[in-house]
Length: 441
Length: 80
Image (tube, rainbow over all chains, first blue to last red; front, side, top):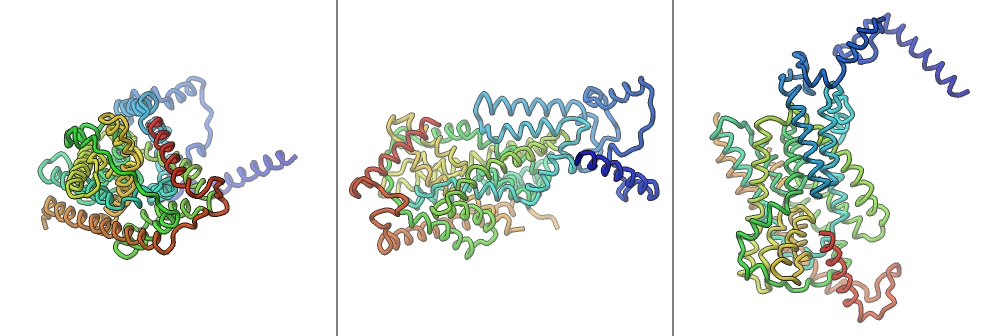
């Protein structure tokens, strides 16, 4: 009964709207007519089949529509309508392969790859501002919301105990941020001395943050400073985070000798519960006093950590580190993937960003390891230089890589907990670096 | 006015690295101070809170934690 009433109301409202439409001039001011609202005209069966063919992907991928526009309303070139889309679909498949067969950051690469696939379906316009991926994008990425939510989850998942037990390893997390600033110079140098790339200082800063090895921070900064390059920056940041086990070990090996690699570190002291509770407050106070520009990122991180360590809000902590971060990761991944649209991604700048991102990562690792070597010269307690590599954030991947490398040279040298210290300090370090860069503009 | 981008970038680096380092150095000292104050004046109560009551005597506490840490490390290792 209810259904019938509903249907009748629906029909009535349709009539009403069509009447209204007949009275008022139908097209809204911006000229966008809803796709399915046009009046139906009788067609012959051949026309119908012909029309159906016109709306197939086969037609769209093989012929060029000179009036086709991208999601910004710019004219699209013939190549980006046809061949480039196919290339992007193949790139999505490569991301799937990396995620499924190689196990690289599957939680991110699966949604990103699928988002890329969806965004490259011709005619559907899923990545356009009014397509569903476009809507997700403008809801949470354009304004920097999702990265902050992820940061809350990261805070709730992170145990800062190893850093509290041995605070001086935070210096490694500071040194590794050299990758960020070195890459800023690299990006502007490319602009100044070549004609291929045209990065502004804002762009350069957003690209440099890739070296912080922190996906959410990268996305946050890029959404503030350089929204046009956000897609490529996010892809580079997450791909290199997934590639940490491949990028870092050769650098670590090149900068250390066998004797340094087998150094055993002392057992970390036990950190009291109260220290852990006070820690987020301490860090937030320091940010408040010295660098309020970093407060959104650090604030979200410390909130998550405070919920965790308070010990009385287990349900909230559980939600932050599971449900919330998972939901936001799905959204973030898909929305980032939607920036894999051919006309946005297959440009020279993307190539530059991918190369610079790799440089940023490598530089950060180099600086971290060198700093660890310097510290081990002056420190009373032994420091294994390998843990410097964990100073780039990429929690906990970088620390695991350090642990794995350490085990290779000494079967029972477990460096994981020692590497977690610089690792979590790196998260704070890159948030601070992001705050510095944001404060400059 | 033509800006020398590389020079600007260099200034960013000097500023950025000094801020990051000074922030983390300040943090290191703040954490050391915090650890000193807390371990001296506010040590964790000997018997942990009621939600977390241990049946084993207090002297085994540190050993328990070592075992827990080792287990966690082994789990991490296997996952990695």
